[in-house]
Image 1 (cartoon, protein in one colour):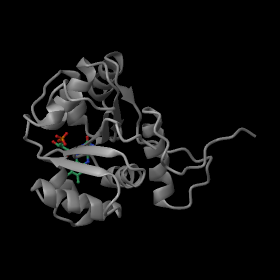
Image 2 (cartoon, helix red, strand yellow; image 1 turned 90 degrees about the vertical axis):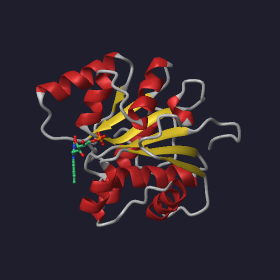
Image 3 (tube, rainbow, N blue to C red; image 1 turned 135 degrees about the vertical axis):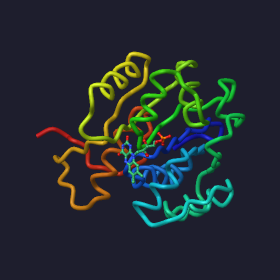
Image 4 (tube, protein in one colour; image 1 turned 90 degrees about the horizontal axis):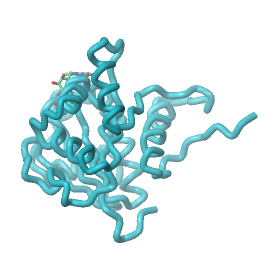
Length: 206
Ligand SMILES: Cc1cc2nc3c(=O)[nH]c(=O)nc-3n(C[C@H](O)[C@H](O)[C@H](O)COP(=O)(O)O)c2cc1C
């Protein structure tokens, strides 16, 4: 559980497939009372439509209600949604203290832009800031197969200090549902921040 003085965690959501990852992460983080600064890229609107047949509102307060209702957490935690184009937002500056940033799911387009330092929207700028400040940047890439370009860009980011946590679940915890598979990936990504709020079955040895 965070203490009341805890800095927020930035959750970047890109237009890779698998919005359920972001929704489940938000569910557990808010329920555990974390403060979340959320920025969804422009492509996310299309993915919501394609994957869930839902229209994500652009207006920040409406978007907060939308994410909360998708996550099933109406009151707990603190959620602030930022427009993708708002490069003047608090999280665009290194002087704004954060616990770091989780990009979940992370598209290959965002991977490429981060690998070249191209801060063309708020999500990319916020991620770039985490790297330059030496804070945690955790990327959960979702693509298959990876091209050599994807792998090179991911390597560049790993060399720059980002943690790469691919959306690859384990099977030793006997998953029964899609949520079991998703939650395992979410838990392993949050492990990188030493945040333990997702109830998964961890390997305890034989
Ligand atoms: C339904 C849908 C699913 C997509 N899935 C992926 C994916 O899994 N991985 C990926 O890298 N791009 C995927 N894309 C393409 C990205 O959305 C596209 O490259 C976009 O420009 C990414 O922009 P962003 O990185 O700013 O979010 C998908 C697009 C759509 C519409």
